[in-house]
Length: 327
Image (cartoon, rainbow, N blue to C red; front, top):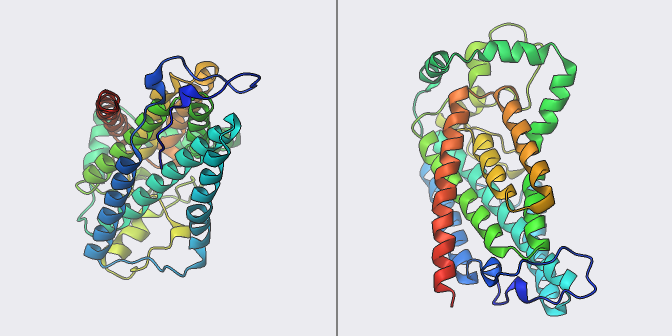
């Protein structure tokens, strides 16, 4: 989903849009063939995981319609914009590309967590809780504080759900300013972080602190609810064999992918000019909400942040290699 043009060469006169950076390298991203090959590999790996776990996706389910719509309309809109060649059209083409790639990566990662959970064994909650105790983190006290204040609940839900808003703003800014290199580095880091998260999760599945620690009547139900203790055993017992794309639930406890995403958002925001502080503040708020709304141990967040830092380093090396070989 890339083309041979560089965004830095776009006409800018009489334009109200933010102007592209002066350096040519800013407009160099991964080649179209490289992006397509990576997507094919990701889809193939997901399909192999589903097959290995005895799971499937119903291609005729109504919940698939939005995804089919994006897959059908995205290339058509982008193709028209590239033919139009006006500045705003080329910006829109980049927006469509970046958003579609991000959605595809997030969807593949979420679906892949189901077969990985189905093939996993045991639960790591006891060990994760012991680490939290060593870190002197009291999840129950954190939860009771949120459960006692409606304002914290509303703020927490909004912050936790910003996992989709922040990348939209981030990638939108990269499209507006012609920073194709930064957009592709972010998307590559997101993909690498997803792979690392799923690999580590396969070795330490958990139901999360809400299910593991709280045994009284529930005064407040977090966004993540109590899906893990119901879904994971059903997947392992093969009583759930069809993955509904419209009802995907978060199964990964450690590492926290919300924490990994927040760390990547903060790293990417440093190239977003006037949006930098807003795009840094939102992920920080999301991190604060994640222990309760995502029902995560503190060590989950630490592991997630570590995964993101490694992924960002690897993505940076990849995009530098691409810039050197793009000539």
